[in-house]
Image (cartoon, rainbow, N blue to C red; front, side, top):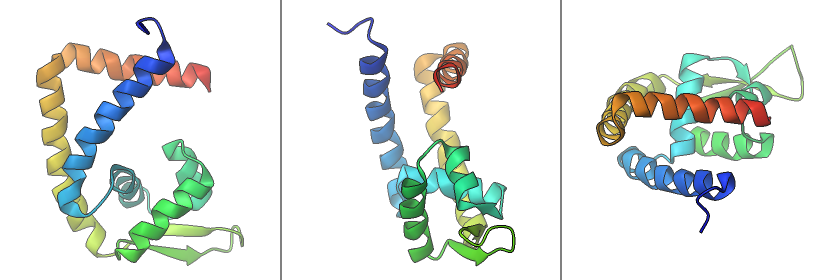
Length: 138
């Protein structure tokens, strides 16, 4: 019925991936959004909230809510900056890198499973194509 509909097919794919990643992050007490945000924070400490939202292609209010959850879990801290009084820089706590190491192992397993199902070349091509389409439509 919707074979040629980009919206329907990408949204259906997103729901499938959301279920897969939700299962994977559940043992860590995180949502997929929190897990991917934490990865960005650990890899790039000191980003402003707005920079983090832009890097993750999410709205600032969504970034704020996700950060609130990570802060309640004791995984991130907000530091005041001299650069911009309206925003805080985001930094991982001492607990975050160790958790990210465990999450990285899980993430590798999920990715390997998807590669096996799709075939490595198809997986890489699909990720590249989706990224290109997203960039073209922004």
